[in-house]
Structures are given as structure tokens and as C-alpha cells.
Image (cartoon, rainbow, N blue to C red):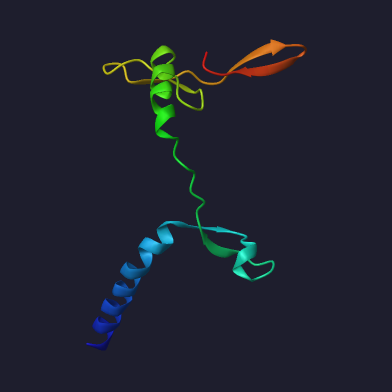
Length: 101
């Protein structure tokens, strides 16, 4: 009986703590007050683009349907995404990555 209560309390605690830990990451946080020890800190959120830039982004994707990292090309609904890989060109004695080829 006591072990059943202990399991229920442990699961309740885990269910309460899980959402907070899912948006946290382990990295050194100087604001945590602990010098030299990693602490749990929230992930840094990247601001979304302003509303004015969204139509321009859609228009550029329609002319060149390549993913942001340049590794996938969108072929339409039936073909979906195709891996195009990283393409390198030889320029001035060294290889340079050609993005969106």
C-alpha cells in the first residue's frame, strides 16, 4: 500500500515537472549565480519575422523552392522534398559552398 502511494506521488511529481524541463537546456548560465557549474536555463527564443517580411519570403520560395539550409528542394505536392545535398564549387583555389543550387 505504501509503495503504491509512493509510485503515485512520484508520477504526479514527474508529470508536474516535465513541462518545465521540456523547454530547458543544460548550458552555462552566468546569471544563475553558480560560477563554473552548468545550470538549467530556458532556451533562448528567436523572434519571428515581422508581418511585412512574410509575403517576400513566400515569393522568394516560389521562385526558388529550396529549404533554408540549402539541402532540400521542394518538388510539389506529388514529389515532396528531394535531398540535393551540399554542392561545392572550386573558386580561387578553394572549395566554396553553393547554396540553393
